[in-house]
Image 1: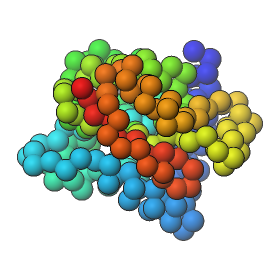
Image 2 (image 1 turned 30 degrees about the horizontal axis):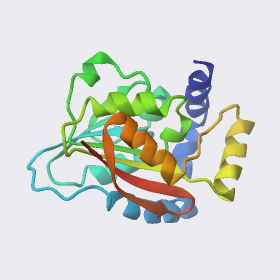
Image 3 (image 1 turned 90 degrees about the vertical axis):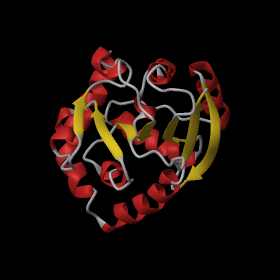
Length: 204
């Protein structure tokens, strides 16, 4: 519980500066490459309506991109209320913990779950995936961006530990094991610059 409280406190404290950072040229260039690779992992569909849940939506960088998909109805969730206050895009917004989702949300079903930059902060990622699995039908997709195990993510981890927050880094084997334990299969895993994996998981 202390870890999750530290995560919430940290992101509440940086929400204003995070919004400014998102407008910088360097950050925008890096995110443009990242988003192209991640959004490509969303399966093509002829559905007229896509019920989508975005985890760790923050100030809305990916929400903006997701809302461009035809027929996509987005629910944007974040642990930090201060981050969501700065989310300007028109969609449903919920402040909640990915590891302990509210019953009202768990009762719903989503065709797509998208999460970029939140899973590394979870204390129990298996618990989170099991909950998400219960909210998706067979063939539904979960798209994740999570740090791989390399020297750059080690530095990334040091940065967050300096702010009192620990992170998890993942190997491809870690991702596959978590997916299997929660009732998913791995569709694709691909490198996502500068130091992440993009993973497409399909509900069994």
